[in-house]
Length: 326
Figure 1 (cartoon, rainbow, N blue to C red):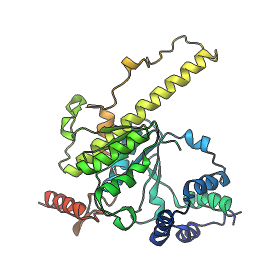
Figure 2 (cartoon, one colour):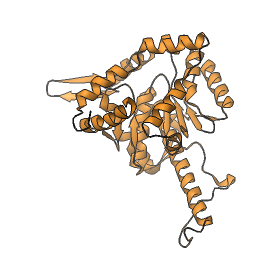
Figure 3 (tube, helix red, strand yellow):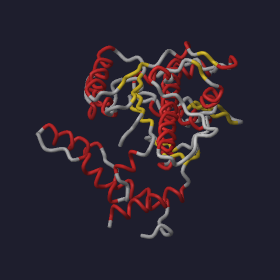
Figure 4 (tube, rainbow, N blue to C red):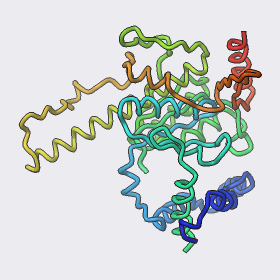
């Protein structure tokens, strides 16, 4: 089917037929337990190659990857907003969606349009039919999706720790000891740094501009988003500096009027930031995440929306509602 005749409704219909459901995931886990070889990664590599995407192309992407039980979407949305207010062009993917599947994808803060979703889906679908992540984050862990991830906190921590890759920088919030032990062991096994983000109340703000955020869960996610976005920017600046240095050494450009960053070990930027720039504060303030701590005011009433679906999330949702419905 040509992309011009491929509608958004066509894309959604075909996507629904392709999505992995719970029974499929359970079958994969059963195969692993019975000793059958898991080919998920090799299959995905083949799918990418069939769509014209090589692993080397993936390695060129600069990605912030977030896992966890609670706050993944909020943290990612804030992180994307912070990076965008710092002037970076951003792409954002999250799951699940609130109303339409296209909400999962944002380009420069805007939800992917229906015709764009249909066009890109058609390209990938037709191609199938005929990597490295430098920064990762793990939000607060709890008991959720236990039939798939495990029945204990250490088991769930082990599943979420799978996003850690060799040489990447990982950030997490304060976790229960049994979960933190698993994360630390996993980071050590893959030779990945693991950093615990600071309490939100410890940050210093440029020009004294502070945020009026009182909900503890939101502050925890905000702190993780701050560290993830600034870590990504720090690595981006370092990579840009290395690229510039290589060009200079190869004689491709002159050094007149160019100031290079000193990347000597003793002069590198700190891993954890403690002062928030005005752009970072603006990014947090302007972050929009529909369906999460979301208040809609109308002429005939006021609606409070949140996607809480675990015991801990429901308690946080109730607290948020009480604080904002006075």
